[in-house]
Length: 155
Image (tube, rainbow, N blue to C red; front, side):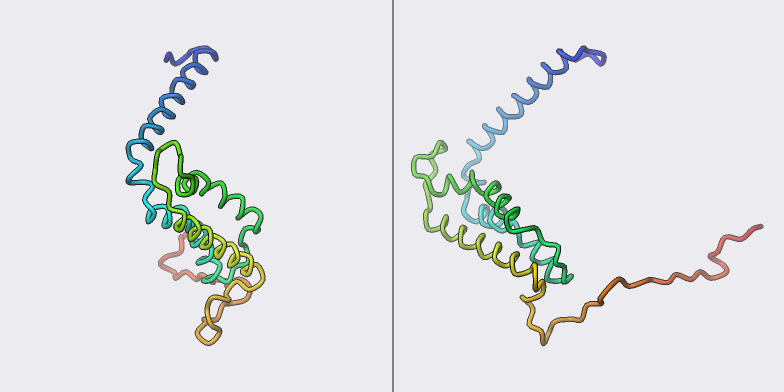
């Protein structure tokens, strides 16, 4: 494509590049389905998407977790296609379904959503109060002092 191509040529070039990308992504999924649709991979990378947020809320005592409605929509959006292959028998990739694994993943995702909901009110409920470290309320102000050698002088 020419550097100074008109808008029609640029859009045509982008359409061709997008089609190439979709084609290679489809081939990638079809030929590597045995690697990427294994139950362990699905469980670790698709079904445990809220674990980092739960960890952050627990360690920092943060109540800034996403709303349950948002978390539910994101969860459904993330796991819809992989879970389709784990439940439907006549799927387009001809993968063997695992209904027990499917329902186990659904239960695991529901547990994560319940924990996020509870963390709106009690962000550190997963840690027993006897071993829970104290968190400062408010912000800690760092005071910086510079020595005479580190200060910029007016020489």
